[in-house]
Length: 516
Figure 1 (tube, rainbow, N blue to C red):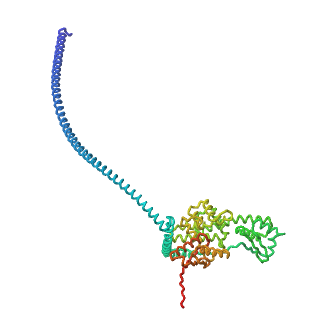
Figure 2 (figure 1 turned 30 degrees about the vertical axis):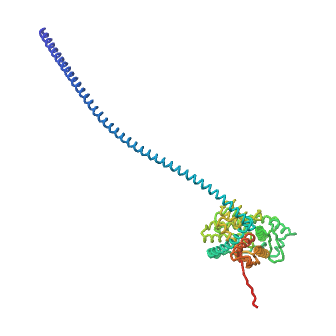
Figure 3 (figure 1 turned 90 degrees about the vertical axis):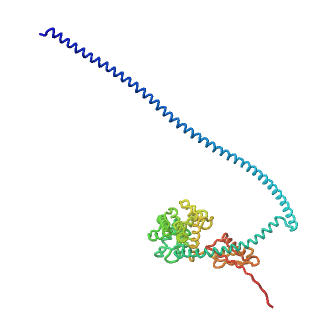
């Protein structure tokens, strides 16, 4: 059993241990406070040192910045002093220029005064000279008994006479130079084009003949009391001539399209054998429709032969109708194709567009298909139709101007006129009546004889040339060339003729004396 002494001994040991622990802790706390105070003292010393070092560093930095600022201020002062010196120089230059300007203004003012004085002096001299000239003119008029207008007219007449000889000489020399340069080239081009193109020409007439198998067919064509032939003529608009000529019946009409329709319809009736008014009307209607197809085929074939693509259908139809139109016995469609080919050949020779040239040549006479229906000449009619069909300005100008109805402004128009003259005037292409031929010769001679200097004029070589005899006393060699040109110009303006007319003027001086 535990005794009280043991318990008390244990309690005394525990109390001693607790006291020891308390003392140890107290010593630790006192030591910690001491260390903390030492640390605080050390920190205060370090802070003071840092503060002093920072103040020193700040002072050094301030001193450095002050030195830099002083340097910048010195540099700025130097620059300002330099700018002041330059401004001073500039001010001195401006002052000097201002002085120069003042001097110049004074010089200009003096020059203006001298110029004004000179103008006044010139004006006084001009007035004086005008008065002198007026006095001299009056004196001259009194001496010559001529007024100013009369003297001017005499001077101009004399000048005109002198210039007439000079102009004639210049014209003659110029024509000789141009003739030497152009005749050979143009001759070669035209001859080459003609030689490379050849076409057959057949003369169409106003009648067509239809072969019949026997003379009995004539009676069937006439019909009882002539009812068949009357019905046929009424339906076709042609005249049917049934005479004693064996084996043929003649179909006559001035309209070639109607005549062809009548011929084809009559052939079909003869082949069919049923000839009566109802059948006649039926055959004529069918033939008229087929004729429209043939017309389009003729037009397309012409475009193909001429090498002209993409032609409006309306123009193709008009070209086909030209197949049944003649001019001075020349078929107009064949003539148009020939002109197109000639235009293409000549265009290749002189460097123009052959496609455009052929198009102009093919369509140049398209108005002839409508000139019996529309008022006006065929060039204007053709140009209007082609314009509505969408042709370009070059083609329209060629159609409207190939007979010089308008002022020619494009080379293709001249080209078409040349090819048209070649096709129309070459041997065998056309023929004309004797009355027109004689009238043209008379017109040529009449135009030449209207000039005062002409003594006589004679048309020769079927109207291709005219010989003009002039009075040698009224003309000179130089004025003769001028007169010849005026005669040619008068023929161009007043006479219609194919191709060209050569004007040859003859001036002869004769001296006659007798030996006795």
